[in-house]
Length: 200
Image (cartoon, rainbow, N blue to C red; front, side):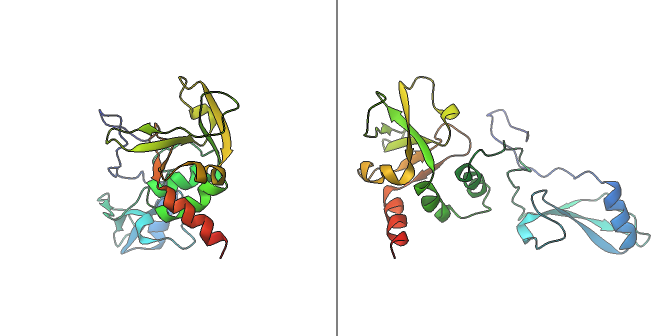
């Protein structure tokens, strides 16, 4: 797992990447150059955006790597690089990519519509949704991407498809995995717009 600070937050400070034998072989074949280190989520032989480059080592005229790593200040660590757990659904995968700024937040509403969510229920037969106040006084409707993430104190958790709760939100935003590190708050109007976009 990625390192955490005293407040249990992920730390993303770039450490000097380990120099492997493959890297040394690459350097010997390319003297007087730079050896770029690519985030593990990307194929170094394919297209790599600039923000997926961890940084670079200089290579001297003899083809030796100079251990003076230059970190890329635009680097965005991937979920894999941060040690995030393997996602159990497409929505969890997208949440991780949005959190790490590998995908825009605007992609979330459409993905939520077709995802299974677990919402609070007082009884197994309840068909409404219940919201809770956050510290700022907003009413949010919590929804989890897997049943294992549902708080133990909930009396029940009802499985629903995202699009089926949009009309029940009464204009309140939905909070996806609100107690997890990787979370998102999506306004109801964004979900309504995503449904409208499908009908165009």
